[in-house]
Every structure is written in structure tokens, then in C-alpha cells.
Amino acid sequence: MNFTLLDGGMGKLLLANGAPFRQPEWSALALMEGHDYVVDAHRQFIDAGADVIITNNYAVAPYHLGEERFAEQAAELAAVAGELARRAADGADREVKVAGSLPPMFGSYTPETFDPEAAPELLATIADALAPHVDLFLPETQSVLDEVRASAAAARRHDKPLWVSVTLSDLEDDGPSMLRSGESVTAAADVASEIGAEALLFNCSRPEKMEPAVIEARAALPRHVEVGVYANAFEQRFEQGYAANGVILDHRAELNDGGYSAFAARWVDAGATIIGGCCGIMPHHIADIASLR
Image 1 (cartoon, rainbow, N blue to C red):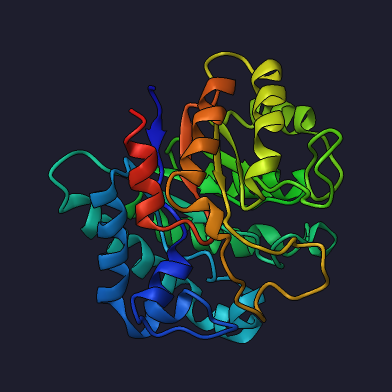
Image 2: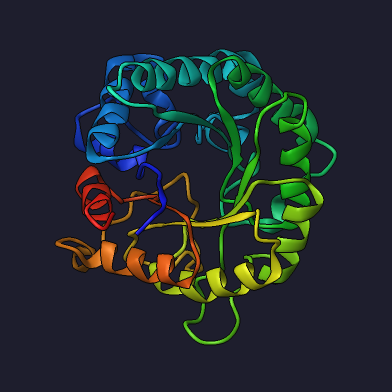
């Protein structure tokens, strides 16, 4: 199988490795108090086979830090995230690229909270700080297409490739795949083409939701635009009424011992050429996927 391999979920790996960690700062706390933990986590994913690692600034957002701390610290913390990922990538014995994360500024999985007036300045702060350190930008866990457009505009301030990743509704197993906003995968493919993205990915949803989305996206996109997946390992569904910066969820044990890589093989067969993992997907999961190549 031929595909580009992403890393997995930084937050849960930092927690498992004993890094400074709490809610609501989540993985951003290690950018403040535990730089070596971040570099080591990146290196664990690289050693597992990752070709691309994602910067550890997903929680550098007002939703996690609060508006005041974001205004004071976001640029510095995002720059640190870029520097640490670059250090890990440059220390590898092969080429490893760094993707700069542009996370949702107003909360994960909540399209209704997106603020189109506030978003451009917030996202530009992150993109500008990451730009010197990354090979490409990756707006990720995007819940609504207006968020995708705003993130792309921030990334386009810099002359770097753009991938974009949307998160899918986990509410039902049956029926067409759709964003958490209710917008269709085909609409997301149209926007990916509109903004000049080199890849459209699906992330931070259950593995079961991904294959139909890959098939629909592949059919809707021009051949030069890649399709990718990095699912999560959460036991619970997101639509169960909790704040994403207030709890720490357990993992699905059945995704160990080849369970997650079995899904990955199906995604590749369906047309995905970029594969990785999101929350709860650890280096051993990434190593299992690497063994498919």
C-alpha cells in the first residue's frame, strides 16, 4: 500500500508520558512547562513511521486558554510548538515534514460557536507564529465550512502548501457522512478545491464514519487533490453534552492489536492516500499502519 503516514494524538501521548497536563490547557501546558516531553512525543511518532508530524498547538486557542491568556501568550506558544516539531523532524534519519495545526478557535465539534468576525485575527496569530517552522499548514477538526475558509485565508498569508481536515458527525452510523454543521462531504470537497487545498482529510471522528466520506470525497475531487483520514479512539460519541476542554475520555481497546490498522487498510482501498490518527491513537497504532506498506 502506498500512502503518506501522519502521526497520532499528541494529547493522550503527552498524558501517558507524564508530561505536565490538565484541563483546560490540555496539551498546551507542555508548551509552557515541558518542552522535552513534546519533542519526545514527536520522536516516538517518527520512530513509529510517521512521515508528517503535526505541531502541538491544538489547544492554543481562546477556548482552552481563555481570551486574556490567548492574547498574551498565543504567538509565543505557537512559535514554541513549531520550533519543537521542527527540532524533532530535523533530528530524524529520513525526511519528515511538519504540518502547522490551525485548530478551531471557538471550540471543537461546535459549529454554532464559530465567530466569522473574530476568527481572522485569531487564526493569523497562530499561522504567523508557525510559518517559519512548518512545511505546510493543516487547518484541522473544522466543523463548518466557513471555518475552513477563514483558516485557509490565514494560511494563505504564507507561501506554503495547504491541507484541510474536517470532522464528521458521529451521531449516526447509517446515512450519508456530513460535517458536524450538517454540510455535506461533497460541499467540503468543493470548498477544498475553491481554496486550493492539496488534500482534504477527515479527522477526530469515529473510524466507522470515515470510509463513506473517503469514497464521496474521492468522487467529488479532482485527482490531484489527495484524500486522507485520521480518526480518533474515543469510546464515547461527541454529541453527548460535554465540553471538549473539560473531560478526558477513555480509549477503545478493540482498536489495539491491529484493530485501527484494519480500518486504515479499508480507507486506503477506498482512495485515501494520507493516513494517521487523532485523539487516543498512539505510536503503536501508527507502527501497525506503517507495517501495511
